[in-house]
Image (cartoon, rainbow, N blue to C red; front, side, top):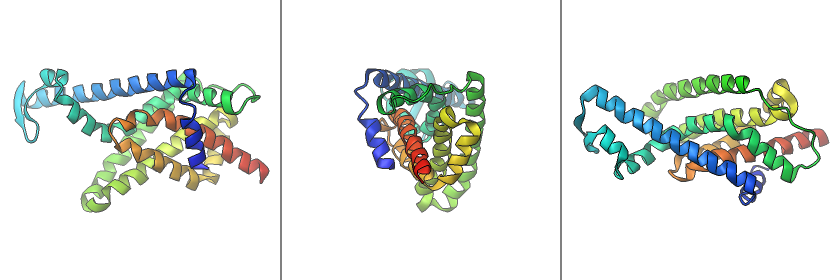
Length: 233
């Protein structure tokens, strides 16, 4: 079910509307990563001065480094950790558009979906980002004491949180907030596994740029599959 949902999403890459949203998502992800990286270098500059020497990085001049080709490597490394909150931010902005493109192609005849009001979407995004960041900060202790398993803990934790958010947002369009929660509780194992399979490629630089939009499409398919399974059962 999960693999089929992903392959159907991947097969829609040629759809002009889907591709437009995909490129917008990639552009936003890249912009957010550059913004995070600029903030990191600015903070480093504020703490230690305009020029300093940092282990492994050498001499750092934050503005020059931001504009240099040498900064790309560090930004790609940081993207492994930053793409989880970036993916969360992107889905609140583009999931409705992605879901509509998916439904127009694969589920024609459905009634018009209920769009989540912008204010509610922003509130949910901010609340979820707080949970996401807080949970990962607490998990740092586990990463230290269980270092060999750190990557699996990272995937498991963020897979659970991302799967929960993506599925809820996809389901809310069709069954409302309460219906989405009920469906999520019923299929939590499948949703968690799908979230883990999404979190894993988020750890790969460059590949992680396309995952938030593909994830939005995949969870839209997954919602319809689980809903249909429940109806037939």
